[in-house]
Image (cartoon, rainbow, N blue to C red; front, side, top):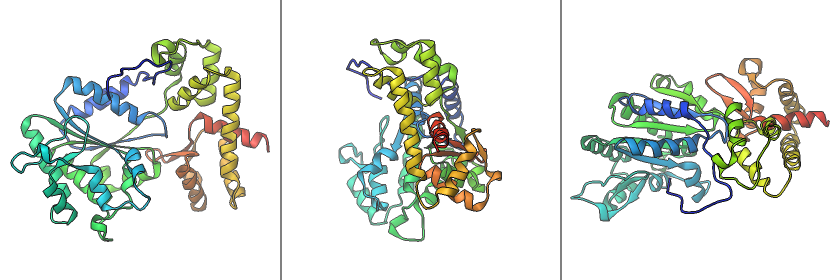
Length: 364
């Protein structure tokens, strides 16, 4: 994260997260032996948490961080991205920093730096990219620098095969490599973040990964943190144009809960509109999202499932059948619901979607 040189009427808030920051610190302060999977609902603040953690850690320890945000990176590629795109993401050609044929280290947040000769051999299949990464980790350890590899939204690589073949799925090879670097060789800390509950579920139920991984949920902010934020806007968001009463803060909490992105969106809209108007439009928008999703050939079956969330906040997997599971899986993919694999339970994707579901059935 770069130093801020500008003044804004509204800043991006970072609220509390002391427990999460403490837990991440404990993880990187022990010898690498497990992969850490950060999961949780969409917009619960996983990426922001990681950036804040790295900002603090960099002031305390000698670390070399490779942070790959695949949600951001793969927007540059077509839907048919392939193995060469993977190489472009993970490796950066930098002949200037070459030293006697050795691969230069990435500094702070960045990619694995290689020279053009190694890049060409990797693309020809003559050099194993995992060996290149391993050598870099070994080199950093010898220097007394702690290597940390963080990948945000790793499921973006799920369709890629090694060398464009159909025999070696890249993501499987990656996880084999991660296990080798943590549980077996203890060379680097590996942190994977994802909002895709079904992707995390395939990892959680994999016997090999389950024995070599920690699954950590990053949830929405609790009410006490939201109230502290909203009643102290100048302190946390640099907002001086207006203040909120306790009643105002309660209304925002009841509408979107602890979803930081949605709260910040509401705060932005308050520069030009009254709170009740903003929240009224927000609820209408959430209902319309449910309407748009429901109106399809399977409408009756979808409504039957969603109706179960009107008076409850969760749906355990053991209460559904295989046909219902297919529909729920699509709701998760479309971010209507969130699936927590560690609990085998479905939840609405935050309070706002829960409102949308309830309003949909109120007006039917």
